[in-house]
Length: 532
Image (cartoon, rainbow, N blue to C red; front, side, top):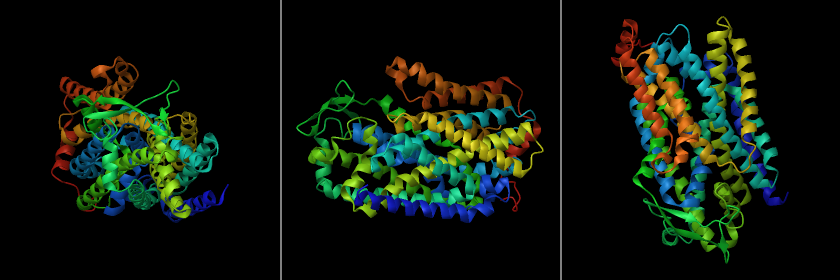
C-alpha cells in the first residue's frame, strides 16, 4: 500500500471511528426498550428527522449509482429520475407525514409499519401484519445487498483488493454498528452522514469543474456527445463484443443518439411514487417528537434532496467531459455500465489530496451506512417485533425480542452478502427493483389507509399482494416483451395495486364503525396533547 492510499485509509478509519462512537453513546438508551430501539421513543427533532430520512433513503446509489447513469448515457435518464424523486419527496412530506404520525398513535401507538397497517384495520388474525413483515424482509434484503455491493466496489477500487473480501468487511462493519445502537444511533449518525454526503458531492463538483476547464467547457464538451445533454435524447456508448465501450485514440466512442420517448420520461418520473411506501422514510414521520415540527422538517429535507440530486447528476456529466479531454484519466477503467458507477471514486482519487479524498469518499461510506443500517433494522423488526412477538410468542418480553432481532440481523446480512457476490452487479438496477417493490406494495395501501374511509381489510390485503406480485411479474416477464411494456415496473404495479384496493373494498363489507371512528378522529386531529 503506497503512502497516498494509506492516507486515504486513515481518513476513512477516522470517520468510521466517529460513527462507532455515536453507536456507543446511544446504545444504552436504545436498549432500554424495543420502542426505543425501533422508533427512538418518538423523540426525533425536525433536523434529525429530515436529514436522517433523506440520508437513509438515498443510500450509496446517490454517490455511485446516479452519477454512473449520467456518466454512461447522459442527462435524460438521471435527470428525469432525479426530478421524479424530488417531486415524490415533497408530496410525501406534504400529504403523508402529518396524517401518518397522528394515525400511528391512534392505531395503538404502532412503532413499525406492519404493526401500523395491522392496527389500522384492527385485525385479530394478523394476516396484514404477517404479509407486510414478509414483504419488508424480502425487499430490504435486496436493498441491503445493493449497499454491500457499494461497499465492495468502494474498497476494492480504492485499495486494489479483492471485491468479495471488501464486501464482507463492509457488511460486518454495518452489521455490528446496527446491532449496537438501534434507531437512535442510526438517526443521529444519519444526520451527520447527510452532511458528509452533501459536502462530498459539492467538493467533487467544484474540483471536477475546475479540472474540466470551467462550467462553460463542461457544457460545450458535453453537447458534442450525441444525445448526452438532452432531456429527450440519450447517449449510446459504442460497445465491443465484451460489452465494453470502444476507445479510439484514448477517447470513448459513441453511436448516434437514441430516442427518449414520453413513455421513458413517465417511467423515470414514476420513481417518485416509491416514496409513499418507503419504510425507512415513513418511520421518521412516526418518530418525530411533535407533529407541528414536520413542516420545518419538510423544508430542510427538500433543500437537501434538490441540491444532492442535482449535484450527483452533474458529477456524472463532469466525469464524462473529463474522460473526453483527459483520455488517460478514466477511459481505461470505466468501460462498462457497472464500472461507470465508480466515477465519484475515480474523480476523488485523481484530483484531491489523499486525506481530503479519504474524507470525501467517506461520503460514499456514509451513504451506504445510513441506508443499510435502516434496511437491516427495519427488516429485523419485521421478524422480531411483528412475527415473533406479534404472532409466534405474544408474551415475549423486550429482552427476547432484542435477541431475535440480532439473530435476524445476522441472517439477513448473510443472505444479502450472497446476493451481492457478483462484482458486475449494477447498484442502480438493484435499488430500482427494491424501490419498486416497496412503492407498489405499500405506497397505494398507505395513501388509501390515510385518506380513504371506505378501504377495508380485504382491500388492504388485495392491494399488498397484487402490488408485490405485479412488480415481480412485470420485471421478470412482461418487460421482456419490450416496447411500451419496457416501462419501469413501479408505475404499472402501483396502478394495479390501487385498482385492487378500490375494487375489493367496494365489493366486500364496509369497514366497521370503530374503524370509521378512528379515521374521523385522525382526520379531525382528535388525539390527545400527550399523545401528540
